Length: 197
Image 1 (tube, rainbow, N blue to C red):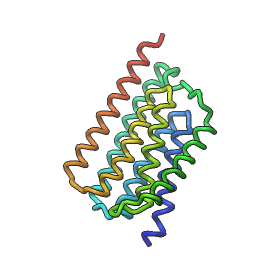
Image 2 (image 1 turned 180 degrees about the vertical axis):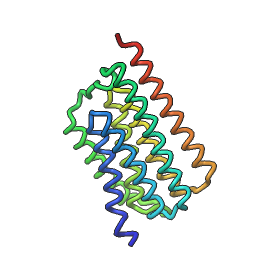
Image 3 (image 1 turned 30 degrees about the vertical axis):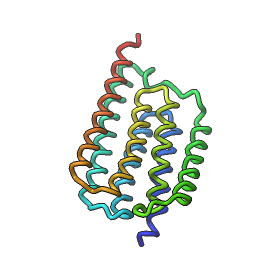
């Protein structure tokens, strides 16, 4: 049963992260990122045996972060639409293809160098989320998308850490750090909005 669900959930998480990388409109981008966070929490609970409360905390913090980003983007869209309309220089096809290749590379690395305490699909998802988040943060011209990239990268690290250590204090601190990153990116988006004529 667990083996049957692990591959589709990993593909759902990585596919939605690649979709966030490829999208330019903020509305579906924030919604798909929330789906990524929820599916990664579900995958942690199913595959790594993380307690339901901790996986729920991962899903709750992802939803809260998506809400913060949605409210900031909505405000920026109403007052200065050019802040969110900054399209990437790189076409969406290349970004989607690069995300797909990052997943293949992560899959090969996880199969070639497995860790004894982590299942291979979870390790591949961790590598893929870190790589896709880094690519998203470096290729974006919008602070909102760069923030989603940083949080995607941090989400990959959280998946790895939650599977290894299930301390509630450490998980709460990671959720607090994610909120700090979200508020910093929200402030950057709003500051950039105010400086535009």
